[in-house]
Image (cartoon, rainbow, N blue to C red):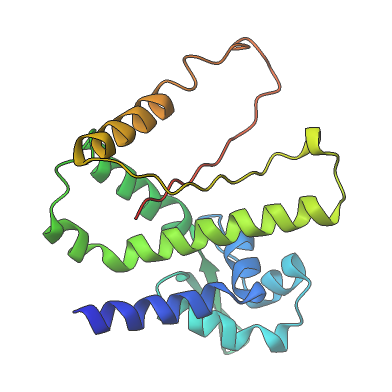
Length: 197
């Protein structure tokens, strides 16, 4: 199992490191899907460079064929990343909601969903890196930067570690409720990924 997980992780990391892959995933989030020609237009990637990428994404369950249409004796396929970007994420959140303290997630559950967890983690990490790179390249002043990261190596007891986890989850659960400008109309989505090992 350990070697298989490493292999899957390596394959997913390699796949997610490809800018074409991320562009296709972002362009195809609608449930109705896009044809390769529409994907090429949306991503500014030549269509002849997309077929291999699309096939890799379908094989990795990151892209789904949602429709097949006959056009002049040819099959035209519509591809969507909705299952990966929305449904899988929503299903995972619903599943994880059963474990509000995140103390009771069994190793069996994690093993059954390991690939999906790795896909989502790698995808969200790439989303963060893309946003960071975009803001740095735009040379935004520090006060306009919306991306940030924080790193820490803490020495905690088991109880301290559980308290940290509880504090973070409590902070996240109450962030919208504690918004000091809750009446603001210009709210934006704040994406967070917290990892601990």
